[in-house]
Image (cartoon, rainbow, N blue to C red):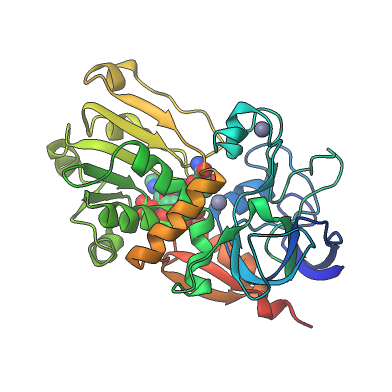
Length: 348
Ligand code: NAP
Ligand code: ZN
Ligand code: ZN
């Protein structure tokens, strides 16, 4: 079927209306009518080729929330009317050890990313959530708890799982001292999730104006990265820091905030290399780790956790026609705290 979408026609070109074709439903496919699509900074990095060359036209969007409107004949996990979500990938090889162990996002053959990627045939481009409908194999579709509003749930599909996985892996919980670097789309989810897990949470931000919000979101403390005295006083104080910063910064000052054996989990993805002073890690037996989203089972676990704890995203809802302006505001760290496109605005 042909569906309305918004696409970047070329690198750095503004997004504009277009029409894309979604495949006919296979036996295990579901059709989702997209209600909301979150705007992730990764959309901007890719459309501006900050991570290298990309596939155009690009229909971004990997924080997709909507309603199942049709199911293939062999679908068992979903029914028409269900609230459903799609995150950063829509398929993978399903046979490698990583896929079999629930780490499909690290598939050693080919993770089919939701947009700016190719299907398993290695030819057909994928198109994301800035569109009215998407077709996906049910094995890569998530159940959004009925208790959560769809608009505020869309960002869980990327921002939520991207923080849930490292927070859980590095044991955010009662007694843990967690730092969240960057209070943006990912960071504000990190605060809410770490607080729900029972950790003591500090927001580490370069924006002085975000202190009140950090505390309102549940953080116990706010550390302004330009406040040298406060940064010095906070040395050696965190067990884990989730670094969501999307810009090129000097990490060394932040690494010194980690306590003995502390871990900085890097999830922010600026395109440039980073200079690490070995002393920053060695003095304190610290680790610098990376983490990419989460597998399907864990993403479902995160959504269920959010359902139980009432965790959703703080959003600014926009019409798709405002997307170019919204992207500039994301780059300027001027969003509270995630833009979500109401895809009804694509109609007509
Ligand atoms: P975002 O909403 O733009 O948030 C990034 C935050 O970084 C900003 O709110 C800001 O927080 C901080 N920041 C921005 N410029 C800065 C600067 N010059 N110096 C210091 N801090 C700065 O972006 P997002 O959507 O949360 O994504 C964050 C990053 O994670 C992006 O690079 C994205 O591509 C990446 N990402 C990775 C994964 C993964 O699986 N690993 C998944 C999704 C996204 P303050 O104002 O509080 O300082
Ligand atoms: Zn994302
Ligand atoms: Zn695989």
